[in-house]
Amino acid sequence: MAETLTMTQQSARPRTQLVATCMAIAAGSAMMAGMLGFYISRRHQVKAPGSHWVPDEITIPNAQLVMCVVTVVLASFVAHWAVWASRKEERGHAYTGIGLTLLMGVLFLNMLIFSLNRMGIALGDGEWQNLAFSITGVVLTMAVLSLVYLALMGFRAIGGDLGPEGTAPLASAVLVWDFVAVAWSAAFYVVYVVK
Image 1: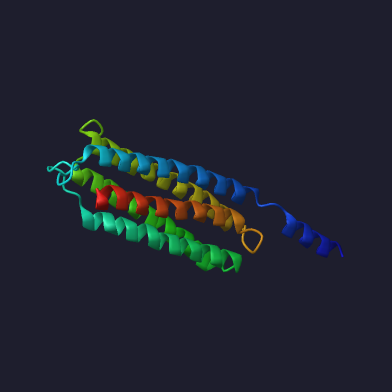
Image 2 (image 1 turned 90 degrees about the horizontal axis):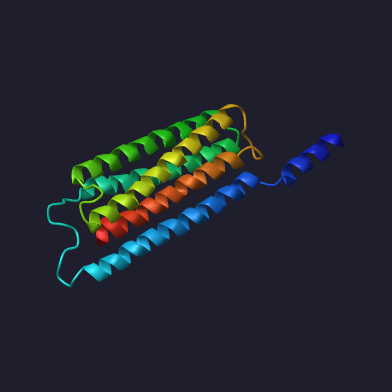
């Protein structure tokens, strides 16, 4: 009887971390929407029909930036695999999924920083450079914070926080990574494809 009561109490406990993470994602979404909206409004005010807003000396490495999108989206799928494995208490799969997600996140950061270096843009070089660097820098910062959060929740999973009740912290970290994937995809399309 006492064991049944304990299971009921555990299943009824609030998922405070998951709710707080969703609120942080909502705030980050508003910030990214505001930044991209400002970029689009400035582009429409500055760019004359038939002219280029992106300076001619800047070459955008499309192949590398597309690979950034592919890497961040694949990492998101692998992260969801880790959450599924954690919920099913498949330790090996959960640990592998967490490790692969962290590795792919580092690869995403590496490719994005390489692309910025290859473009040679810096703050203060012009309006497009300022906006592109700022938006990409915000995505980079969110990706680093997301990887730190995922690593911490991964250590928690390694410590034995698995199963249907213990998966919420890992799932909240994966939601943040999903947000980074969507934010980068939107930033890539608006800043580097539509220009």
